[in-house]
Length: 170
Image (cartoon, rainbow, N blue to C red; front, side, top):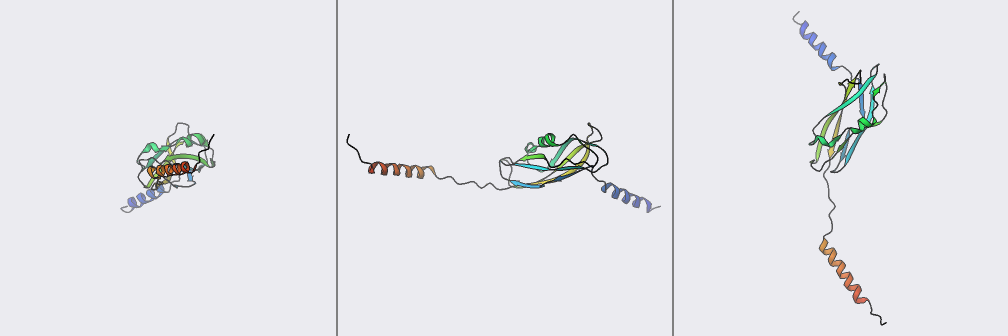
C-alpha cells in the first residue's frame, strides 16, 4: 500500500501531460525577423483534433516583447472561422501581426499565442497554443551626404557654367 500512492501520482501526472489540445495551431513561420518600423505577419492553420464542433472565441498572448501594444490580433478575428467542425481545418489564414516599434532593442523576443473557445460560443477554455519568436535586427542607417559639400559642388558648377556662357549681342 505504501508504493500505491506514489505510483498512482505518477500515472495521473503522465495522463495529464499526455492530453492533446483540441485545436492544433501550426504557424507557417514561427520565427520572423525585421527592423524598426517593420510589421511581421504570422499566419498558419487551425485544425480541430476532436470529433465535435469547437468554437473559436478569443485569443491571448504571453510574450517577452517590451510593449504589448505591438501585438495586433485583428487578423485572427478577421480571418478565423467562428467554429471548426469535427476534424475541420481553417486553411492558411493570418493570425496576428507584430509591429517592431522604435523602442525595441535589437535581440530575440519569444511568445505564445493561445486560442480560447470550446463547446459553445461563450466558452473560454484553452484550445491550443503555439510558440513564436521575433528577432529584431540592428538598424543600419544609410549615411546621408553632407549638405555643405553638395552645396559647394553645386555652386562651383553654376559659376563654371556662367563663365563659359557667352553674352550675345541683340
